[in-house]
Amino acid sequence: MTKKKLSMREAAIRALKKQGPKHYRELAKEIVGQIESSGATPEYSLNAVMSSDIKANGDKSTFVRVSPGYYGLRAKNAVEQDSTGERIKVPHFPEYAQVRELLRIWNGVSTDDIKAMADEINKLTGTPQNPTNWTEPSEWIPTLPDSVRGLAERIWSESGGESIPGMCMDIDY
Image 1: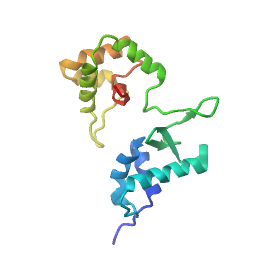
Image 2: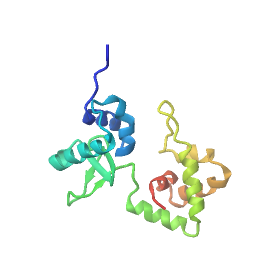
Image 3: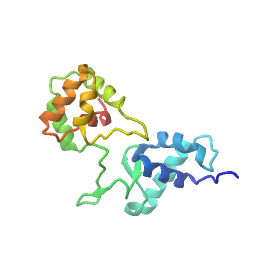
Image 4: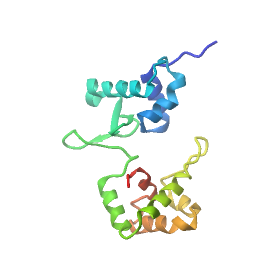
């Protein structure tokens, strides 16, 4: 008995429910074996499906664009609109105030040191069966190598526990 293939939309919803916001290219790679489509460029087809859904349904769309190329599920990601109804907040991405705080703490730190810390934090991502609990930096910061642990501890302590060192993984340097 063969397993029924899903529509691109259905497969994207399932994947985003499990993992949260993702870039449409990464998402397409994950779902390509589950979908009906056999097009040459599934990533562009998926981007079109989600973009069209947002354009057609507005704030009632299942999908939400969290940044260029990144999509999530509106209900899953606790999206909030500000008073203008224009902006959204998704817990996965840092807010401007948090980025400002990081920049203050990073003053005088080399970009190479920040990248090295981000690379080491990225190695801690865990597995689906044993994911890293990013909400408890006091548990995973001590597991970082000595060369980057100091910077991670500095970010955590100087921000009063407000800025999580892992947020730097989402920032372009």
